[in-house]
Structures are given as structure tokens and as C-alpha cells.
Image (cartoon, rainbow over all chains, first blue to last red; front, side, top):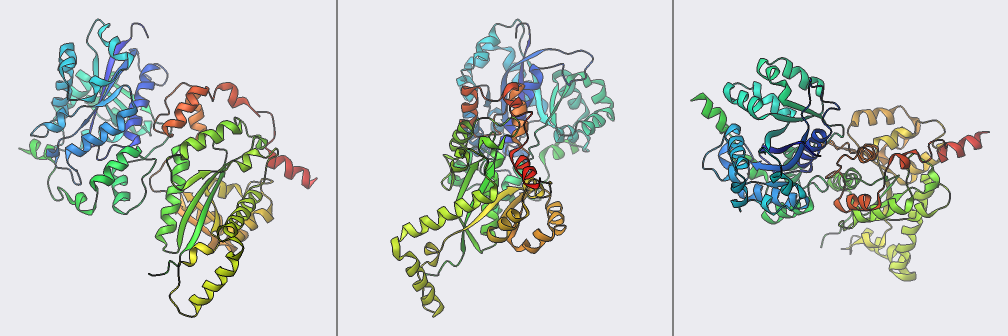
Length: 271
Length: 273
């Protein structure tokens, strides 16, 4: 893969808990970007080499209903990603005292990646321990790697929820960084982009990945099954299921956490 | 101690398992949860029975590998196991025969448990219970019910001409029972409604709703593998390792049996001549 642009994928989310589907997003995105040019429908195609994946669980301050403590969500993500040699979890966002806007998280990681010394110095996250060949390759590229936000189609559609996003942030996310969006129904996603001037203007920076193998393993469904004493085996790694059992996470009580509260970004953007 | 009056059940899943996926393993989990939630059943065992090479399905790789992968997938399960009997038969075996075989095995192992007195003891305990006395667990002496575990595709394959013998369907749903996991419960219900045979035995057909859609079909997995795409997190890790180290699933392996007629179709076409 000589001459390809190094790329890091960042996924922000609750990861409450992390599931096979979350990890599949990374795998699908990487495959797509490595074969860029097949289904992309772009006027021109940049050829990328995905060198790293980052799972960034949101902080408890997000205030979402049913969100269990960040400590647990980070620990579960770590367990789930043990068998991956390129995806790791970064607890930075989860440790912030306030909820961080997505652009803040992108900026943080982008600045970190700009400075290779930064990377060697950060011992908190598991990525430093990943021994993938790619890590060495990163230093052999002339420029610093690009950083793109990895997400599902549902994330893209949150752009239209009133007061959830600031317009200038949407522009920064899709314009400066870029999106890799994994979607089941490309037609709907295309239409959504088409109906937004901002997204259309930056459409070359939105990579749409078609998810052929449908996998609706939403964390919400997993929590529901757990509350009802039903099995969630084979939907998430056994190590994560074990952790959930040991710490008795995801009960009727935990689902009521933050119930009735307003989501932090809505609070912030209304002020 | 209250007697456990639930009926013991063993779930048998027949299929290509080419390869086994997380979805296959989920079928067992979903079926068990469903049956337990009725309060009437206790699922004590799950059996994965990969089909023999004699089935001659396009893209079917050697039974040896398919069994090995299924064993790897079920290693971490304490109740689902692989039985290679069907895969070891030279010729393709009708599903009804496979079910019969496993039913006989259950009968025999039940007899072996309490030696020759098993049946006598069973009768004695049943007698005591009917006399109103506090009984021990009746369950361990009765033979568990064997049910065929499947997806909606198998249920609907009953409608494919020449694929199934009428009397085999009757035996499976009448004598044993079906546990069918499906995303589209209403389609399955309609299918049952439209078949006199299935309708007659509808009490013996348990429809389990798969709310968390998991469309991880083995066909798609093989396609992804041929195209060097990742299938990580869609199958158990040890199965993935096995596929990679044995280099299974290539364009060549997919062409296997390409010009051969599926065994059941061949067999039934011959019979009808």
C-alpha cells in the first residue's frame, strides 16, 4: 500500500455497552477505504491506508438515559478490543469533567496525532500497546495521518435535530475532518446528504459504506435483553458479558439513570 | 422441595454450517430463552448436526472442516455441542432420519443412566406423584423431548417441491416438534396457516421472535471471505482463526457441486419416476 494516505478512524458514542456491531463498523470502514473506488461514486478517490481505530466512549456528563459509569464503559471496550491489533479505546473524552462536543474530541485527537511524541507519551490508552505493523508505518509517511469520524447513518441524521448541533461544528466535522458513515440503506443516506446544503458541499469528504450483512445489534436492545434475563451471547464478546455479570450492570434501575434529564448538548446549545 | 414439572427439551439444529456463525449460535440462545419463558420447558442440551458432503450443495466444503469449526464455536458453551454422526454418513440423510437417530440416542442414554431399572423407577415415581405425595425430580427419569431448531427458511422450505417427503414433515412436526426462530413472525404464521399439515400440528411449532436482527448468513460470510473482506465479530474468533489458517472459502471452493443436483431433489425426483 505504497503512497497511500494514512488514516485514523475515530468513533464517538455511548458504547453502553460496546457490541459486535460497533466493532464491525471499524472493519467495514477499513475494508471500504482500502478498496476505495469501488462503490464510492466520488468524482475522485483518495486512496487511504487505515492505520488505527479509536473507540472514544462519551463522558457521564452527556446525561443520556441509561448511561452507566464511564469507568465501566471504558473497561468493557478494552476487553472487547483485546483481540484487535489496530483498534483501541481512548478514555480521554470519558475523563473530561464536562461533556465534550464531537469537534472538541476530533480536535484533541488530531492535535495528538500531529505530534508523534504525543502518541508515545500517552500511556493511558491501550493503543500504545497495539503491536500492529501499521504503527511503525505511521512514522514512515511524510505527513501526519488524517483523522475521520466513523459513524452509522443514524449519527448523520442527528445533524437535523434542532439544537443538537451548531452549524459551524457540522461544517468542521465534515469539512475539515470528514466522515466515514456505515449504512444499511444507502438511498436514504444519499437523500439525506442531498437535502442538506452543508453536507452536499462537503460530499467528497463523506465516505458512505454499505453494510451488506445486516446486523442490528443495538446496545439498547442488548440492555433490554439483559434486564429481562435473556441471553446476549454471541452479540458481544464473552469477556464483556462476563464483566457485565460481575458488576451487575444494566438493570431496571440503571436504565432509569438520567431519566427526565435533558441531554447535555441540547442544554449547551440552548444557552 | 417443589417438583420441577417442566418438560425437558433437547434442541437439534441441522444445517450446512458452512461456516458456523454467531447467528447460528444465537438461534440456540433465543430458542432456549423462549422455551424457558413459557414456564413449561427446560432446555437441557443443544446439538449442532452439520450435514454430510453427500448433500452436494454448491460451495459446501468438506464435512471434516465444518465439524471442526462447529466444535471450536461451541467449545465455550456449556450446553451446546456438536454431533458429527450425520456428517459421517456416506450418503445424504433425510432430516427426519437424523431426528429419529438422535431420539433413539436419547432413549438409550436415558436407559443407561439408571441401568435396567430406569423404566421401572420412572413408573414408580410417576405413581407416587399421582398419589399426591411429594415427589423427587421426575424430570431426570423421563426422556427429554427432542425438537428441531431452525430458522424461517427451513420452515418455508417445506413448500419447495420435491425437497421434503410429506410423511417426513408430518413426523418432524407431529412426533417431535419444531422451534423456529424468525424475524418475520407474521410471515411464518401465515405459512403455517396456509398448510393443512402444519396447521394440524401448530401446537408443536414454537415460533420465536428474533427482535435483534442478525442477518449473518453463511453465504454472505463466504462472499466476504472470497473478497478478502473482514468477517471479524460475525463468527467466533477461533472459527475465524481456523478459516484463515486453513485458507478455506475461495472462488474455487464456492464452485464445488456447481453442476450437481442437490441430493434431496435428486432422491425425490428418482422416487417419483
